[in-house]
Each structure stands twice: as C-alpha cells, then as structure tokens.
Length: 368
Image (cartoon, rainbow, N blue to C red; front, side, top):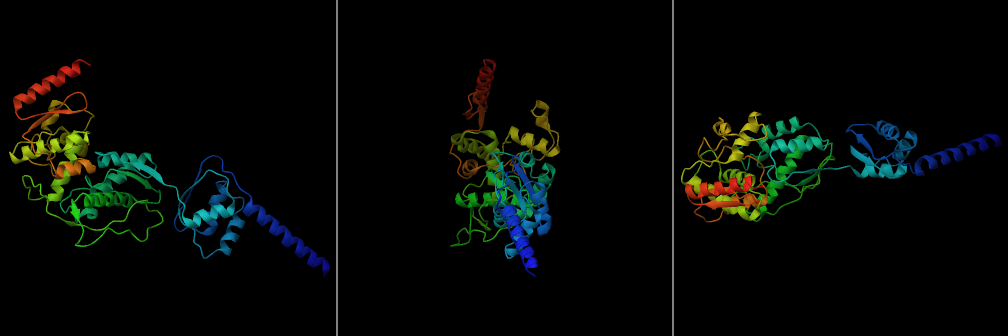
C-alpha cells in the first residue's frame, strides 16, 4: 500500500514538474513567427498550430491550462511572436485578442486601384478582390451618395491598421467611416439635430483600429455649381475635390484651382482636366502610364475634354484640404492654370495669358 502511495506521489510530483516546465519555461521563437488562428478552430487545433510554429513547448499543457481557465475564449486572428514568452503569456495574448495589425497607408489622391495594390502589398488579400468590393458595394455610401457608381472618392486617405481576419468589405467600410467622420468635421455632412458622434460599442475580432461610424444627413451646400440632375450637392463637391486633389499637391493652391473649375462650369466651358482622362483609361484598363495627344479624344463620360460639366463620379480619393477647397473655393476671375516647373501653378484669366504661361513652362523644362 505504501508503495502505491509513493508511486502516486512520485507521479504527481513528476506531472507537476512537467507542467511547470511546459507552462513556465519561456520559448524563444526563431525570428519573427506569424501564427494564423482561424475562426472555429478547436483548442486542440490551436495548440497544435502553436506547437508546430515553435511558440509553446507542449500542446497538452496548453490544453490543460485552457481547461482550467475555460471561461475565457481564445480569439481568432494573426499573431506575431518575436520575443521569449511562456505558455501562460501566449495564452493570455490569445485570450485578449492581441492580434497583429498590418499598416496600410493611403495617400491623398489615391484611386481605388492604388489602394487595392497597397492592400495586396500588405499581404491582406487580392487587389482584384478589393477593386470588386469598391466597384460593387455602393450600399456603404447609399445614404450620402445615392448616385455613386463605386466607392471612389469616399475611401478616405489615412493610415489604417488592418488584420488578415478582416474582409475586403470591412476594410472598405473603415475607409468610408473615416470619410464620414472628416466630412462631418468640416461641415460637408451633419448628424441629426443635437446628435453627437458615437463610438461603436463592440467590434468583431478582426476589426481595424478605427473610430465608430454614424449615419449623417445631407446639408445644403453653399457652393452649388452648374447642377447635374443625377448628382447631389455632396456628390458634386466630392467629384470636384477629387479633381482638385489630382491637379495640385500644394494645399494653399487648392482653393484657386477649385475656383478655376467652378468658373468654367458656370460658363459651360469644358474642364479639360488631364487627370480625368487618366482615370477614364484606368477604368477601361488601357492606361499606359502617360498621356498623349490622341488620349484627349478617348471616349468616356469621364473625359472632361470631350464632355462639359463634371464627370459622373470622383476620379480619386481627396483629402481634407481638397474637400474644403471644393466647399470654399477662392473668388477669382481665373479660367486657366498651368504648372510653373517649380511645383506650383500660374493662373490666368484669358487664353492668351495662358498660352504665355504654357510657353514659359516649356522653356523652363527645356532648361533643366
């Protein structure tokens, strides 16, 4: 009998020693180790994945420790392990959902095609899938842009942090959310009387680090150029802002650039915006990286050389400064502008003045 007791005691001590070793001994990953835990995986499958990746010492110890703390669920996601950690630390991270975020930088003026390539480069999915989402899921902006053909113009330029668990719709929605927040801040949209912005109280495990969204009502804009029956004031403002964004990277010039285009709209003069042709060819898949004279006759409603008025939708995603310029253009008599070869533009009232500025630009470029 004593022998049995001793054997049991030895077994208990051995098991305790094994568990202490398996649970408390730090494991150092071999470099940066990424572990992707999918939704619906069992604790055993998660333990096997962690063990196979060299993050923990024992699957059984992981399962046993989780059984003791079974009220705490393990969260799916992508986890980065790069520092020594023991099994308890690893499980605590997964319980807290300490997932790895990929940084996606969307500069001002990026098109949905540019954003799609950036998302693919970050390892978050196929660029084609994002373009499909951006071209089809206009329900995300139906309340503020009911006539939109895509999400172009409403994918706000910002630095985002996304996870690999997020869908393309969730990433697009985060960008639209940021547009809504900025649009409300600058007075492009407004919430219901007396309402304030509110945070989303809960997010899915794969959500981005972003603010919550609310739905805004449209307000009447003071700037209302030549009305297009199918476009709301907000839509026209975003379209104009996208053109301004593409024409100049100098914030202080943007109100003047906007004034040129509004002046031309009011006189029923074609906008003649080169970026609109580039965008038309991007949509058609024919853009070769540079414009030529023949491109000016490219058949597309986005070609503002062939068609008067605004194009049917934005030609990129404008930032805050360009949106404000489209809302509050400068008061001017300018109808033309051209680059000055020094990063700025020269503005003119007449075509004759414009031709002189164009000649000066060409001389400057030849002198380089």
